[in-house]
Length: 91
Image (cartoon, rainbow, N blue to C red; front, side, top):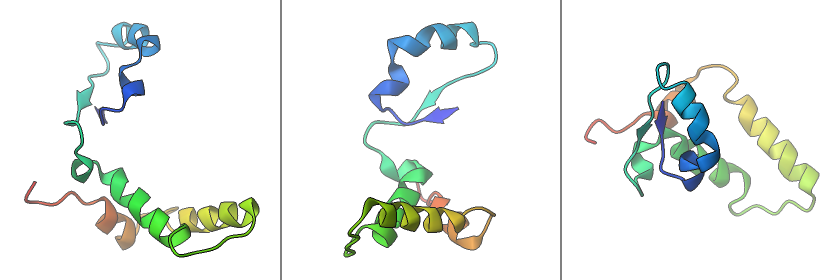
């Protein structure tokens, strides 16, 4: 499993689980401060651009609806998702 280096991925509470399943799972941590290597960061960037940047939503329900509509774009594999999650070939 490839993970970023956020603190909770190193939490003491999960160490016992990781030891127990060490024969089944290997954790590979991305270098610190490397969002360009983490494809989900591109999705988060796009989501914020489409939902919150330069937009005024008066109610929380409107924000939730906007997020729900955004997520529907990714219910099936599509070119937008492929493009946003693609890691640059020069990295």
